[in-house]
Length: 178
Image (cartoon, rainbow, N blue to C red):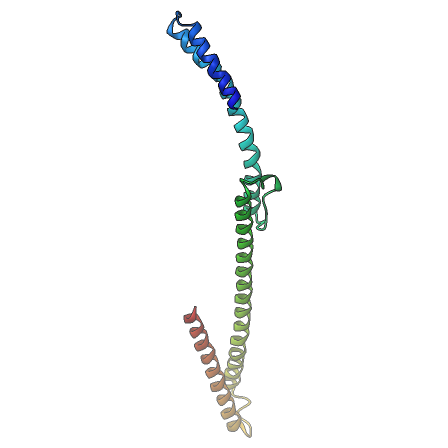
């Protein structure tokens, strides 16, 4: 690159010397003309190099965006200038993958908690509804020992209502913890 610039500089000096008696436009063309081709060459090489290095990086980011969290940059971008970028990209993907797994585990625990809660609430509710139905009908209570049965059913109804109240209280406490 230094040799090319030296040659271009010498060529410009020579053209300025040769065109001293020419118009300003010809002199300007003589000075700028030799720099156009190298400038275009450098532009094309730069564009090729940047394209070659950024396309794999963009593709890797798109893989991460599509859900491939542990995606890594291809080895061709692991040159000395891109080692830090490659390591940071791998760390980012690993951290994202770990975070997603934690969120999924917490979601699974939440679903299990709600399933257990629904079951625990259904049991006393079913018992209360059944006891209320039995007490409302009254035909079982009209025979011998009906008063004792009624007292036992009312006691069970009260116990289940208290159990249901305790579950609701625990649920309220749990909601306040979060």
